[in-house]
Amino acid sequence: MKKKSIALGLLSMLFVSAYADEKDLVETATSISTKSSGEISKDSIYWKYPGSMGLNANQAYFNEYCNEGEGLSLSLDAFLNLNANYEKKRAKWDNAFSAKYGFLYSTAFNGENIRKNMDEFILSSKFGYKLSKYWYASALASLESQFTKGYSYEFSETLNADTATVISDFFAPASIKLSLGADFVPNKYISMFVSPLTARISVCRVNELAPSYSMELKEAATYAEDGSLLTDALYKKSRAELGAYIILRSDFDITKSLHFFSTLEGFYAYRKHVFQYRDEYVDWYGLAPENAALNPEAFTDAYDLSIEKPVHGWSIKWKMELMLKVSKYLNISFRMQHKYDNAEQKAIDGVNYGLKKADLQFWETTSLGVSYKF
Image (cartoon, rainbow, N blue to C red):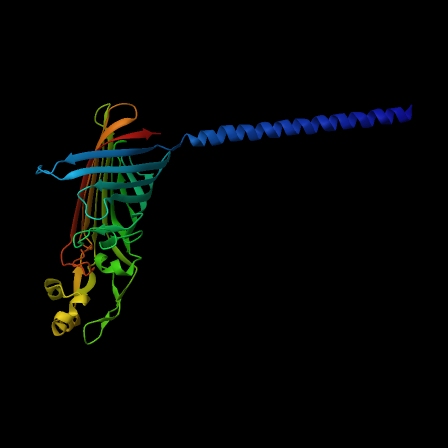
């Protein structure tokens, strides 16, 4: 009887223990499930991931008697915009990546018929802490460059990539900005970031392109008595400037089917950067190394002159886009960009010597395309 009592007692303890373990497991699982489905889903409310992607095309044809153009031209470009935005109480954190890439085909081109006509990527992150109804104390970081080589066909007789002048490449140039300032956000459509303390780091990883972007000279080129090149000039890969920065963004629907997007940004360096370049006497007479034999004395004298030029580091860029929705996915878009940078120079005679004036850039495109917003 005693043995039976002991056996029953042990079985009861095992049953209770098993039940308790099962209960603990159920409670633990319920707790984990509640935590994951509760807190994480609750926190996910503060994150938003809007974005868009699309493909645009444009076509034009001019016969041989037309004054407005010549031949057949086709352009195709793709774009991608990704965002990860967080907002909770006083904290606001916006992250964005945008990229554009496109080609232009024309029968009017000699040599290669296809050229790149759009190439850009921008990565940015801005964190703000709300101080009042419309103002945030903010920190911003951004990176801007292009994916592949860009060419100037101005001095090329055959107008193809083998003889054209390379004017840009991946991280040649690139611009990195690190800013501390204030963000004015009156509504969800407009924002203005102002920073009196911004570090702009200009990067050019390709030594041959460095003079075009005012990189500091490390070692000057050396030449023989007949004017032939012995060693190339070496330039630094980056240039840092401290200055003021402002960027104004607008992003809203004018009507149900018409969308407007615009960014206007400007930077001014507090201290003048000094860029060393050759005298324009060489530019004027076009005394490139291969022409030295025509006038060796003048060539040597000209290359002995090295002049330092102050560069303010003053830049402005305005981008604007209008998109008309024809249907859910079909749209017509107009895009343009103006850019002025006092620290960017132009190449001449197929060689990147640099000029004394800033480079003013402009492009625009009107196209029919498909896009998808998410």
